[in-house]
Image 1 (cartoon, rainbow, N blue to C red):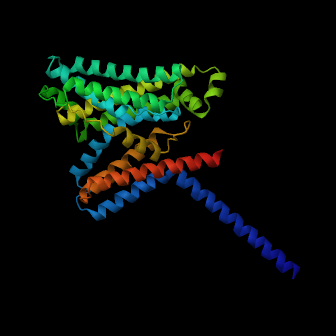
Image 2 (cartoon, one colour; image 1 turned 180 degrees about the vertical axis):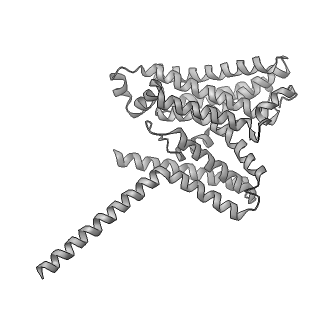
Image 3 (cartoon, rainbow, N blue to C red; image 1 turned 90 degrees about the vertical axis):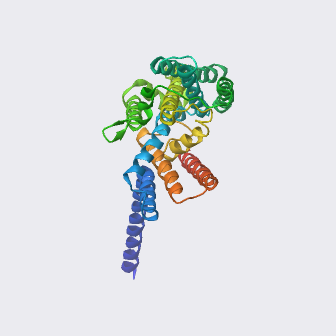
Length: 335
């Protein structure tokens, strides 16, 4: 009897160890590849639900749609890594859209100087956000929310709420052109995302982003110029939002004051889905790309299934809430 009992205990311990091992492996796979599994699931579902989903024209359309979001998401990811947030990027996209259109149509500028000035303006707005946050110690959500309202009002004042159109034909190449079978906006997104990965992996500033986001006080004590890092991060966020605004303007061929409306929430959702923590210090650009594709495929699939725009808003809001809740739970477990 004692031998049998001892054998039973050994088997119980063995099965318990095996179960714990399998559980930890599953958790690790879910953490590393969860967003990719979600993306694959959505692709399979919509491919069966709609015969038009895998049409080449539709896939190119998805790629074009997500490219603008992807461009803005790189700078936004930097801000989240820092433990901040930038709610002004949607309005900044609109401002760049309107300023560039006004310069080309009303001021008679050629596309190149108009684009350069608009990008300088967007970087300056981003720098202003960073300066206020770093020097006045104001919460990023308040600073960028106020800036969102200000620059949206400025955009309305410039165009008086009316669309601006009549650009040179050469300008449309940025948003509508192709290099072989690949749309130019997708190439721009790929280049900027590659640049974002390089900054995070191979530069001191990239490491500083993680350090400041992980523990700002410890980063400052270790000799990192935290203010300078914040200036750089918010400037990059504004600059990349400006590029997204140029691409949107070129694609639509019309300056619209609402062109960037709500973009900040789509980008936030994509970044958090991609594993960038709202608490700072954790995240990868490669996973952000997967998060962007999830949102793009979801939006496109719902349109193909003729789902109401208002229902889509409900679904996207629920996805954002679920993604942030999951991130908060993971952060709580670590602490």
